Each structure stands twice: as structure tokens, then as C-alpha cells.
Image (cartoon, helix red, strand yellow):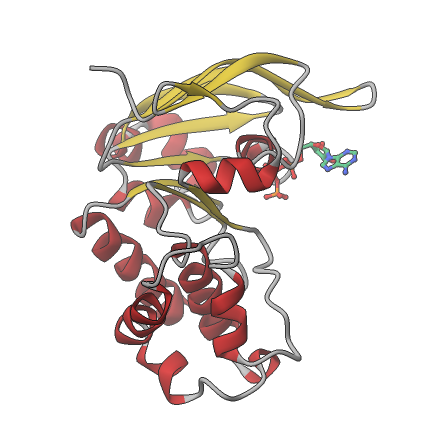
Length: 237
Ligand code: ATP
């Protein structure tokens, strides 16, 4: 059976600078796959390419049997791939509810109100403050809103870019628990993280990215116990 997402020899450049140098990986239905690596490795560039914000120089992206590379972002969303971006990009002056509804703007079905309620069930603080400006939320709460908004398009694959960025260890734990709960609900997730420990603890498969290439791959468990990974990414001697 082929995977839900198949990335083959993907190359992405900014002008002459090659940021992603021919990477291949796949994400199976119901899996959490993580890309870990230091700043500037090309993880965000990969995510932005998958969601149609950047065009690859070469390579293919196949999602559920369909070629995605070259599609516009709104077409990618319509096919079922949602992106919760690095930095969250919520709209601070709009209310929490308005931010959530933006995640559903391409939908024409009547289930949107039900899904807003589901986001509030998952993140009660968003429901309690639904009429407040999103900019009043803490960093961790804004991350919940970004995830809730991405889920509003009822995706089959969720791209989560650095959900723990700037968060306290406690809030990071809470966000990671939510990511695990989403998987328990059947969601398929591609997770980019600098917090390698937290990401590998959740992931079925992981890939270490360095200067545009995947240098090491394995199950989350294998990578957590890999000597090089422990030294380079888990802060161990
Ligand atoms: P971070 O966690 O810091 O976002 P990353 O692994 O996601 O790191 P990218 O943001 O994908 O890395 O960056 C990969 C490379 O591409 C880096 O060398 C970066 O400087 C470069 N780059 C990123 N965005 C641009 C851009 N808009 N124009 C030119 N170069 C860019």
C-alpha cells in the first residue's frame, strides 16, 4: 500500500541558494513523522513547499495518489493538507472565533459550526475566550489556536511547524500531548521540531535534516537512542 504522502527527490531553492537538496520520505496514514534538525536545515522550506507556498526546482510530492507539486496553496488545502505554520500567524486583532472560521473559508458544507465546537472541546481556553482578540492569548494558547484553525479544514494530513517554539517546558508538554491525542483520533501528522526529544518521543518515524539533506532516518525510538542524535540534538555528551 502506498503512503498518504510520498516525497521524492525534492529540491527547493531561493534564487541560487539551494535550501532543500533532494530529499525523499513518506508519511503513512495515521502516522506521526517528524523532521528534526538545527536552524536553517531546510525544514520550514520543506513544509512551505508541501503546502504549495513555494515551488520546487525538481522532485515530486504525491498526496493520496495525486501530484501536489506545482499546485496552488488553496488547491492543496482542498485536497486535505493543512499547514499550521512556524510563528503561528494568527490575526491578533480578530477574535479567536474569527481566526478559527478563517481556517474553514474554503468549505461549503454545513458542518463548520460543529467543528468550531470541536476545537473548543479540544482547547477549552479558546472557547472561554472566543470573543476576545486573538492577540491577547499567551504564546501557548496562540499555538492551540493555530492548530485549531488548521484542523478547521478537516485535513487528512496536518503539517505542524515548530509547535513548541518559544513555549515553556510545561506548555510544550501540553501541546505535544495534544499532538499525540490528534494521532489517537486518526490524524496523520508531519511534525517539524527543534525540540527533538519531544518530537521523537511521539513519532513513528523520524528524519534528521542538515543543510538541506536528510542525514539519518529511523523510528522515533531508534533515533532517540542513536549516539549521534543524542550528542547533536538531545544535548547529551
Ligand atoms: P528554522 O527552524 O530556523 O526555520 P529550518 O530548518 O526551517 O530552520 P529553513 O527556514 O527552511 O530552515 O531555511 C533553510 C535555508 O534557506 C537557510 O539557509 C535559510 O537562510 C534559507 N532561506 C530561508 N528562507 C529564505 C528566503 N526567503 N530567502 C532566501 N533564503 C532563505
